[in-house]
Image 1 (cartoon, chains in turn yellow, blue):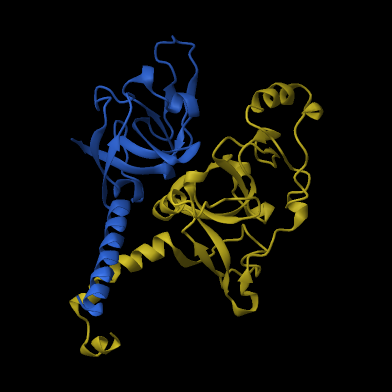
Image 2 (cartoon, rainbow over the protein chains, first blue to last red; image 1 turned 45 degrees about the vertical axis):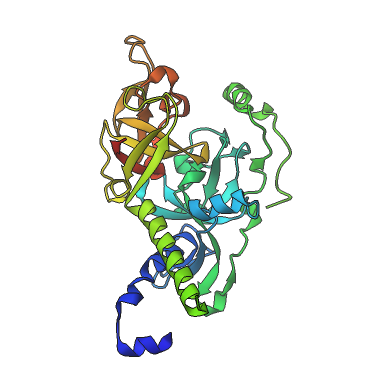
Length: 212
Length: 145
């Protein structure tokens, strides 16, 4: 097969374009990380001249691969607390943002400013995402919980620069300590009634700090 | 059939399937629509609809008030929903137009749209789950069979 390349570009080589596009958009790809919202996990240098390049797993959100994987019962992708994901910004559908999942559906989160409510229960099918750098991050504290349909992939590891090749570092625990609690469906009416009156008397499940 | 031709046929099949997958994701797709929420535009029995996937991916997205779109359900992203856009970002919409002057109104935030089925009595739409982010929109319906 490699001998064919010696004759130059031929029509058969065009047949490889759709699989290349498919792999790049539905299976795995690499992308670079811009911005400071995920410091110090990505782009820890503050000069912003060099950006990290990361490996992006798109198979867990590809409708083709997940549908067949679930149909044959071999694979069910899950999005859990601590995963770093790429999602389309709820504020601007043309922009992609990279954030970390802090809480999944039905869990209760104590929000940070500028969110107007002190406590939020993440609705079904949504996630609460935050950047690792609290002061330079436009995340769920700004636009609220994000639907899982907006997620475009999960970041598996850093491939550049060579000094930091490896899996994605876990977040500093102080960032989300004592802010995420177990919840259950149908809780939000009680939170709404109690949070308005006495913010200290909200009853929710155990703190999820043990599994950051 | 020799091994070489069998391998070539398999390879061409995989390449064609990848081409079909990329085409339905980025250019156009044909789907079946179920349910009574868009009567009389679509019938309650399954309808073939043709949607083009280029408009939602443009910058800015080529979506307007009155377009019929398919989007992923916000609470269950494995399900696709087909509704009509009633309001774009920045608009103020009255949730129940027959509710009188004091009826609740919603200001659509940036990057979101308000969707409603043409048959509002049998439609689960933005009146239940609020404005939908435009990133969930998959295609704009242009034809129906």
